[in-house]
Length: 388
Image (tube, rainbow, N blue to C red; front, side, top):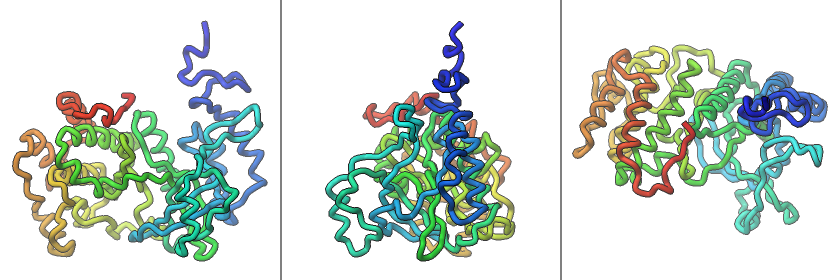
């Protein structure tokens, strides 16, 4: 019997053992990574050890992390300021590893031809590390500079490890993700920076109005989002900062992002601190209880409402102590007229004041799976294609 038939990813052409991913052999690739350990360093033994352990155990490119020299980044441009980080757009000259090229005896990487605008950006005075005229290829990325992270701690590195495990799990679920590609360090501030793929269509927050006027679109989108959340919960993890700004769009996909990256780097162990965006925070969290899977479901219910309204929840009132108290008293956004009754019922269950009364993500995913089939999107080419 052909062994390849029994292995979903075939056999490694080098050692003839089962691949752990398409074109990926954990045993062979870990040796190639190990042989290169002496050729790079972050300058931080803790981070070096963290990356090396990941590279020795990665089952696919999905879980892979690299140390990226800052001088391999070009056209670094400020995008936004967050609560605990600063966001930049940039070009990574090398691009991420996809597999080993046995003919060239080196890593095959994902890069694209750079376009005319990339070279025009060189003249922008706000750009750092401008692109050079002879640099023709690169990969568009987002840099997330973590505030006060020069002394990054082990707990926060463990959060990243969970994120990478979750990336693999979500990929197995047939859903998309926003992968962490690597880590670098700003030589000026000494803050560490996360590299992630740049998604040009913005976040769900930027596209809410479109979702409002395409009712069937929301069934497909929320089904897809629920599958990603289910992958997180299957690992017995919680997102902890689930809101419309952390759901990114790259047609036809929606990506849950910022899992494990939405709190101060140096305060991961402080239990009595509350972090998050107020309208999405469950009442029990506001009362000082820990984040749970049920708290993520509460946030999902708020996102359901936003898909019917076209605006962020509680956008027209201050996000202050009064709103916090009202959420704890059971105040929720006003139901939009014309919303499907079954949808309203599920939404209300998701944002119930009592965590135990909220549905599990498995039930939510099952319901949206039925609606996704019953109410197909008009533009089939825009439909999110999943492999479940």
